[in-house]
Structures are given as C-alpha cells and as structure tokens.
Image 1 (tube, rainbow, N blue to C red):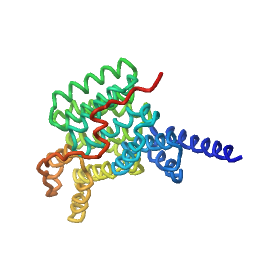
Image 2 (image 1 turned 120 degrees about the horizontal axis):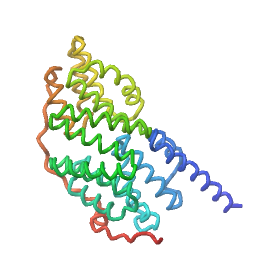
Image 3 (image 1 turned 60 degrees about the vertical axis):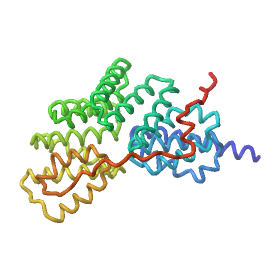
Length: 329
C-alpha cells in the first residue's frame, strides 16, 4: 500500500511538471506558479527534483527572475553526479551562461556556454547557444564578431526551420543596428522578429521585439506606427512579470506623450528616474541616454564600466573542466 501511495504521488508530480513545461513558451510565469504548487521539492526523488529545477531555470530566464535562477543552479549542482543531471547538462549550463552574462561574469559565461555547446545534442540547442555566445560578444563590444555569430545562427535557423531561434537572431541583429544608429535597418530586423515571435506564440519574444520596435518608431517620430503597436505590446508587457521591460515601456510611453505635446512634470521625471533603476542592461541604458533622456530632461548618467567580478561558486570548477560523460545511448 505504501509503495502504491508513492507511485501515485510521483505520477501527480510528473503531471504537474508536464503541465509546467507546456506553459514555458506561452506563459512562463504560469510555469513558475505550477512549480511553486509542488510543496517541498527538495524532498522529491533526485530525478524529479532535477527536472523541477531545470524547469525553474527555463522559466526564470524569460521572466527575468535572476535571483531565483542562481538559487536553482546551486540546488541542481548538489546532484551533479546523478545520471539525469548529465542528461540535462546542456540546459543547465546554458542557463548558467545566461545568468553569468547578465551579471557581467563574461569570461565565465564563455566557459559555461562552451561546455553547454560541447554536450549539445540537437540543432536547436546549438543554435540557441550560438545566439547566447553572440550576446556575450556584443556585451564585450566585439560588434563584428557578434554580428557574424548572429548572422550565422540566422542562416542555420532558416535552413532548419527553427522559427523561434530565427526570431531571436533577427531581434539581436536589430539591437546591433540600433546601437550603431542604423535605425531603418533596426526597424526591419525588429519587424521580422516580431512576426516570427507572433507566429510561434512566444510571449517574452513578442514583448522584447515589440518594445524594440516601439523604440525605433519614436526615434523616427513615427507616432502613427507607435500608436498602432503600443496597445497590444503594453497589454502583454504589463501582464508579464518582467520589471525591466515594464520600466523601459514607461520611458517610451512618456516620450510618446511628450511628442503629443503633453508636458512632463517633475513627478513623472522622478518616476522615470526610479524606472531607470529597474533597467540593468547597460546597452539599454546607453540607448535611453542617447535618445530619450535629453528631450525628457531627465538627468541620468552612464556608470563607468566596473571591474569584472570573479565567479567563485565551489561547483563552477566542474563546469570549466566540463568532463561529464554523455549519457548512455
């Protein structure tokens, strides 16, 4: 009877994990809610626990829950010798690479992504990792290397029909163009990215490409296009738990209202300053400083690049060595 109880409990947990995984693309916030409905995940059998935490990683990236992501990684690496850990090595080290990049551990991010690529088993994984490596190059201001990697990933995504990755590469090529003040090219990339994200129902991608496209409209004073796109983009953004995207949208909408001859009060300028603190991406901060801060009369400053920290988790040496064997066929 007792063993029957545990089998039933495991089946229920598995069903919840299956449902949580189904929501990853369309609503990763719901994925996290479902995962949180599982009480005491640490008490699960190791394979179920690792699967639970891998889903946390995959949902934490689009929802920008970076604190939760690193906690999940700490928990997962407690099981780094388990066979199922080795099977999940690519998504684990890929998520780690993203966390490292976003927290400015760029050399460590390269090591993690290279390990992830070494153990990748599908074209989709390799394409996603190529995109992540390009993002690290972009953050290192290696613009031509980043463009080459994004362009190569875009071509491979086209050849293999990977629409979501094609959308990612278009969006990132648009960011490179925007940062180099090639606004028309940036708009073209963002339009293409948004179309692909919409066709594949990726909410986080629709938000990112939509906001980026709104940015290009404002820079070009194309208020009609801004008005058409703003409402659907705002509806998605405000219902999505990503404070950074919401902060950026507030900046854009305030600038739009100003272009519509609405005055910007001191109270709104303070709100803009507060929202600016929610924006962690240094590249986005530079764009706001270049295009938005002066007309809005908001006194923001770009911080000097800080010395890159050293990532010192005790388990990270295993990632650098990357000697896990591949799972048995």
